[in-house]
Image 1 (tube, rainbow, N blue to C red):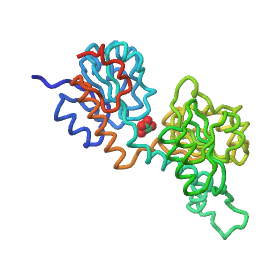
Image 2: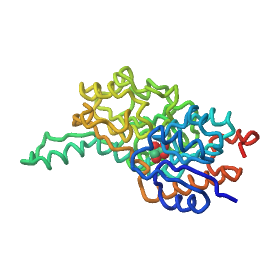
Image 3: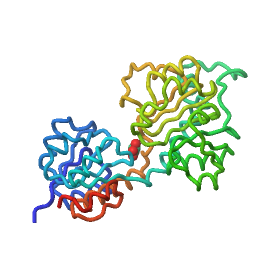
Length: 330
Ligand code: DGY
């Protein structure tokens, strides 16, 4: 029996890749940058399974070019790169990698929160550039955390994990804005569900943990930044399109908000000449929140398990469209 043909759009940790290679006729895109669209479409024509990254658009034209495709396994928890309803219509199962990156991502959100609040990167550059002359009573003044208010947008797994850290470690008051209530967070963390405007006006720190969809696209725009405190710190580790890039630059530049810490931007990567990168009160990381050994290995294992289950017609370990079951391609 020939092994199923699969295309893996990047090298992923061997914890997952070795299993894929053992069970499949796998082609792995060898470059560190994404395969060009033409390559993706070409490989899709033969593929029974694809392991995709958040940089690979799994859209209708790709699915139309992929008559044998039975499973798309995304190496990410976010799946805004995949048209899931279109996959369901075509009988294609879709999986992602939730839970295993929750702590790593919450840790990165906190790392950005305290670093942006205390102006750590700016201060470290000041030292490296040779400006440190003396101890300065009025220099490098940053934000306090203890007892301040944290506003979470999207109180799911990652939002709750950040809230736990900030409540338990820094006694912060927790507000959240979400379409769904989170009774656990309300009981265990004293979190209060509020409308968006209340979150904007009352929070000292705002951290974004929601999915990117029509409702959240551009949610943080000029009007939203204008409603925030001038002392507020804005954190985004979810998706770059949730804030409007130019509006954030303007808000940071004019002092409408104090600082920002971003693990995600739009576009990614940001060109080196982007004005955001010239601002002392912005910290930008290259989308690394899940980049810990344990998280990335576990993401690889789940991505492999989802791919293999999809090829075998079995339930996926983390299945985004289980409703496809009755019409699945086999
Ligand atoms: C995800 O998983 O969606 C992150 O953005 C990358 O790990």
